[in-house]
Image (cartoon, rainbow, N blue to C red; front, side, top):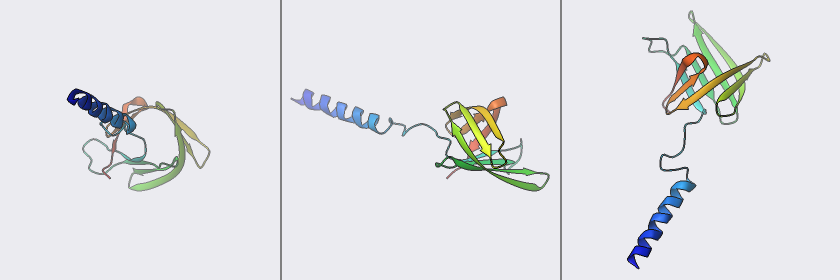
Length: 114
């Protein structure tokens, strides 16, 4: 009887991990604030904010000027499509790792702490 109880307990734990996406709590998502830094800089030169509703904002600082552009986006898990209000669309291949978004050409954004 103890063996049966132990087996049932293990199965319950395994099913509960499967139901919530595993022991790690799930994988990284695009949603959030991503920052790109110049080497040696403490202030981000570009910030991408991806919202859950598939909208976002890109903030870029160049020569002391700040430019903010709103966008909408879609992705298929490896390709990101960003459409700006001026009707231009950018397409990027990308990979996500914990705290790291790497887009085409090896540009690496770091996820900002929440």
